[in-house]
Amino acid sequence: MEPSHQAIDGSGYHGQPATEPTIALEEFYGAFNAGDLELMTAHWLTAEAVMDNPLGGIARGWPAIRAVYERIFRGPARVRVAFHDYTLHEGGALFYAVGRERGTLEREGQRLDLAFRTTRVFRRVEGVWRQVHHHGSIDDPGLLQRYQSLVRGE
Image 1 (cartoon, rainbow, N blue to C red):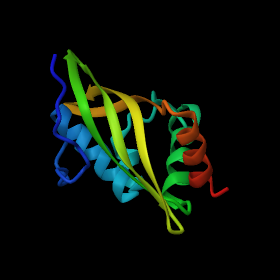
Image 2: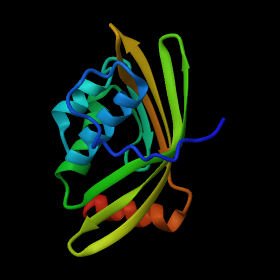
Image 3: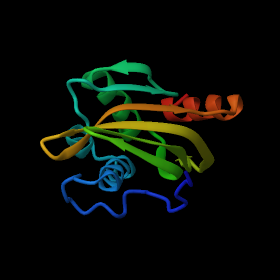
């Protein structure tokens, strides 16, 4: 399976229902890069959501996941990412996307180039894809430490 090299950054999302996997991904990255907590809430299947990422560890349920996004969106750092080098895998009412995110974090004149490994899992509910799981990790321990520190405002 050849990975897609066309980056998804949310610019292709224009409010349409997430009836296709790529629209669901555009919706997520549109919400994330705009810091749109309302759209992020609508995007996730909130009753069953689980997220494992460098900022929040394992967050189970929407209230815990929401707190991680609030910290990112309302904190002193501005984070933007795009999904690339990914493959999509669909079967029945589930699809998952496996790839990489690259982006930037900017805070008070500092800039950090970001690189994550990312997996996202979605479930189709009433014809619309809703995210149920995200796992993201940073390979470089130094980058991980700088990222956590800048987002947390340390």
